[in-house]
Amino acid sequence: MKDYKMNIRSDFQPLPFELKRFLEFANIFETNNRERWSHLKNQEDFRDVYLLDYADKEPLERIYAIGRDLAVAMADKLRWFNYPDYCPSLTSYLNEPVFRTSWVAQLPELYEISRLAKEKMEELGGKTPWAIGQMVQLFDEQLKLLEEVARCVISLKSSELYRKEQGVLSIQPYIQILNAINRVGKTFERLPATYQDKDEESLRDHILLALSTNHEFTTLGEVFNKNGKTDILSSRHGHTEFIGECKFWHGEKAFLETINQILGYATWRNDKLAIIMFVGNLNIKQIIDKAVHSIQSHPCYSLFIDKSDETWFNYKFEKDGVEFELAVMFYHIPRT
Image (cartoon, rainbow, N blue to C red; front, side, top):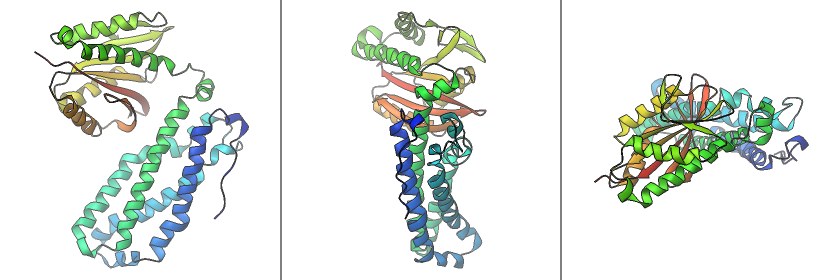
């Protein structure tokens, strides 16, 4: 197998971590294509799948066809950034269809293909060829790699180089605002007797007060933006940097409706969002588990980015072709 280790082009040197990971992932996909998929297809019992009825074999054949196509495509495209003739800028590279419209963007559909194959395997039982089980496992491994690729793309889009190419400011203001909210939320938890009888509006006003001390931003409550009034809107130099919504936890259905609500406020220019969720129930861990599970069922859900701490989760959503970053932050305020 060809050794694809290479130096990162000089104009991308400020971005070594993510791009080195791309090269590492490309090597894994290359090995999968040349060795693992090939072996399972040609040297094991995969051919027995053709003895099955069409309805039984179709979801199993798709695992091989799509899984190997994925390996071929990602082994190639994850290296393209190093060739200026193809990708003269970081922006042109991240605008490649593989990141925007095809493989990386289709993770939910790919997981559904895996689910249907597993469902069919369970139905067939001992009639399932051994190679199919191994292929499903390999398919899922590649989806986990694809999730890491998606996280690297988000990180690259947060880089100074990318944002300089876009002519926009650093992502740092969004992080500043979230950190300020997190400090206030931890204060709520540290002094429960002070805040346990406060309603949503009162708790929101405490957050607004904290954000207003940062004179770099103008932060207001109950501001009209697009389809309604936002709880919190922070702007700088006339540009909206952040939209936040404060809610008490009232179940999974209400939680998903809150996501609809905040996405309704957002526009393509206002893509940094947060839901600040106050939990009055005694068992906050149980509530967080429910929320983290249910959020993936939202039709605009795209990707889990990371977890900033035990009650602060960061996601990517997509609506009408526009990507949004959504932080979901939970704070425990037991009710009397």
